[in-house]
Length: 212
Ligand code: SF4
Image (tube, rainbow, N blue to C red; front, side, top):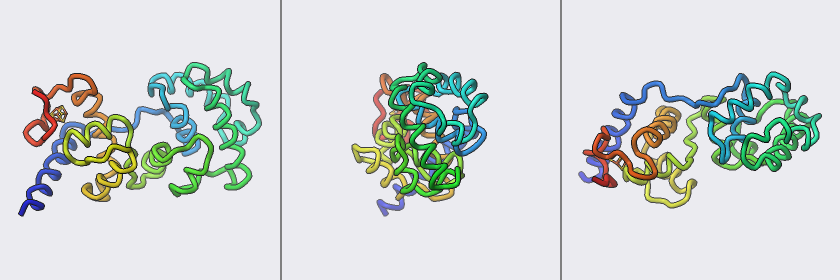
């Protein structure tokens, strides 16, 4: 009985998120899975807007893994210096590009395990590539998803991987892609890290974490 009530609550949360953020998508600009991979690596500790500012120029000059594999870390670092940790990211992108050229025929692999073996690609970035570039039912957990899911009582775990596991257990496979983007949208617009807007939140009647 209790489980049925919880399933109904989750269903209602997903429905409200779908109505509130029907068009929620990634803000990152890209044309190919490889470009999305590069953009996702660049986005660590950098806003999507800043990444787009950089990649608009970057992808006009370098499009394919071969183009990046030929660069030196110093050359690429000059192109991406507007984002945080740009020296590390430069090394990672070049190393990942070389692996793609040598091992994958310049294609981006479509499995979580293979993606995570690429330099600079952690679990969240790998899941972003699967979700956004390949349309897989992956549910990347970033800081917004982690916070909103915990406040809403959809997850209790403290680590992104634990929260991901809990979300996968309650969100139907066909809704995971969109749920990821909608939880982020809600975290940015309403369920902010500091002073969430619980008073105007459309989920407040379903939320054990509401604060006022
Ligand atoms: S009620 Fe508050 S804590 Fe809960 S989801 Fe809405 S904004 Fe976040």
